Length: 226
Ligand SMILES: Cc1cc2nc3c(=O)[nH]c(=O)nc-3n(C[C@H](O)[C@H](O)[C@H](O)COP(=O)(O)OP(=O)(O)OC[C@H]3O[C@@H](n4cnc5c(N)ncnc54)[C@H](O)[C@@H]3O)c2cc1C
Image 1 (cartoon, rainbow, N blue to C red):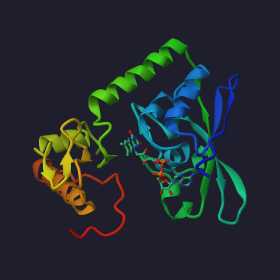
Image 2 (image 1 turned 60 degrees about the vertical axis):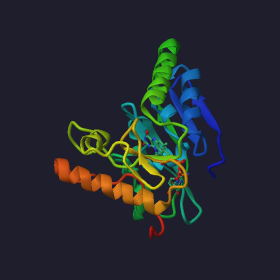
Image 3 (image 1 turned 45 degrees about the horizontal axis):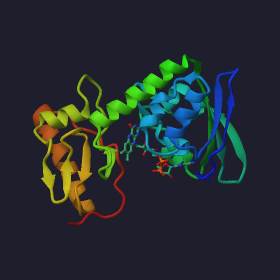
Image 4 (image 1 turned 90 degrees about the vertical axis):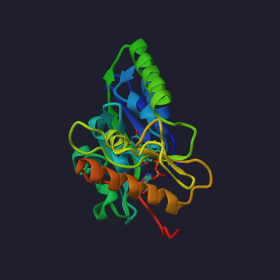
């Protein structure tokens, strides 16, 4: 189903219906080409519309909950239903699809509502996001993106990890990125156990330094014996 990559632009209404398999980066350029603004943030997010709805993905001040109007689902009993965004259980990086309520539901697509925008401004916003990512994210090195959620308050998870002295720390092939301390990189041959150990070390160092317990953003699946 995530190979289904159709979309339908209604320029007059300012809406686009995406199949779940449309890559987020492509969705941002489809919107830009339609002269619609509000989806530029999707350029930064690896993954498809389905995964982005599942995670209520967001970046650069935008997130799926802010633009989605409805979601089409395939239920476990084989029926299709369109639900309004209010029923999706969205909160920060959460949706009902992550919990038991969404068990057995497959996201077939989502409709987003955007705003008419000046094409040159949309283009320069996309360019700004591209530049920001190149300058602030260690792209091209294997990673799972942000390891911890940003806690409430002024300081991001990355800033707290950096303040705790963990930037650049390595365990085996796993390394806390020098560029973005909330990313753990596989510098070559890192095992799952090493990545998990470095995650634990960052969490413990932040707790000791600032008293804040960081919540993990990524999911650990399987066993992590060294
Ligand atoms: C380098 C990197 C940078 C990242 N940056 C960001 C960021 O800036 N902001 C952000 O929010 N996230 C970010 N992420 C996380 C990423 O956006 C999420 O993991 C997203 O959910 C992945 O989408 P996907 O299509 O790859 O889903 P997958 O990884 O394939 O799946 C993720 C989960 O979603 C479920 N799922 C996927 N499609 C469907 C569907 N159609 N119906 C029901 N369930 C489905 C899967 O079963 C799985 O449980 C980043 C990840 C990486 C690796």
